[in-house]
Length: 193
Image (cartoon, rainbow, N blue to C red; front, side, top):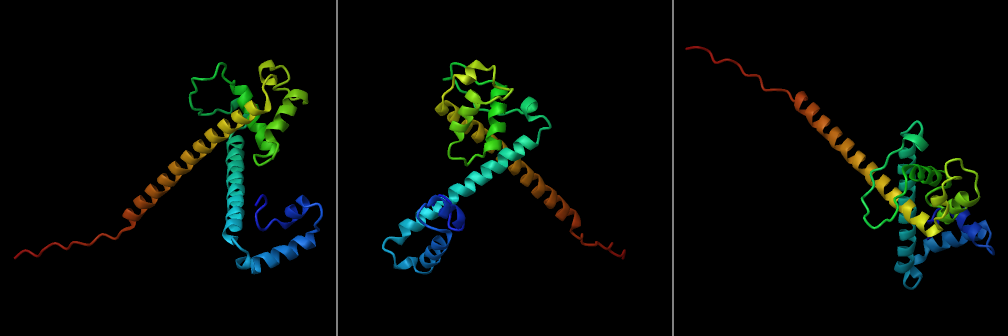
């Protein structure tokens, strides 16, 4: 379920005692006779849930890429529409948020150890944007993961809203073009009697 049903190379890489050929043979046997397995619906559900998670991660990665690529200098100019939080004692700065977003894009949203990787980059890396930010250096991986999820959610909502506006504008333009293209019934003047 972690890699989906088609990425057999990644599945075989996760299994130390199985070769790629073994995984291919097992996969073909499974998909030809999975109905013979007791409770096969449960296994199919796990596979489909894993594939849905992979699709969602790919979509989030693409939205993140679009957001970062829409700015010429993302570490300086990128802005976010974040929800207001009254519980935070100290807000994250825009520079910290921008750095986290660029690093999420670089590492990949679907990375298993994304927060740990970012934490290590903050602590031991030599990133110009964070080497003097003592508040950011005092964050633990859980806080970094929560902030990354908040940023990712805000970016996804923003991109989805843009897509809806674009679709609505396109539908409106098509409707306008369609109404203009309708042939109008010619009216002939009535003869005077």
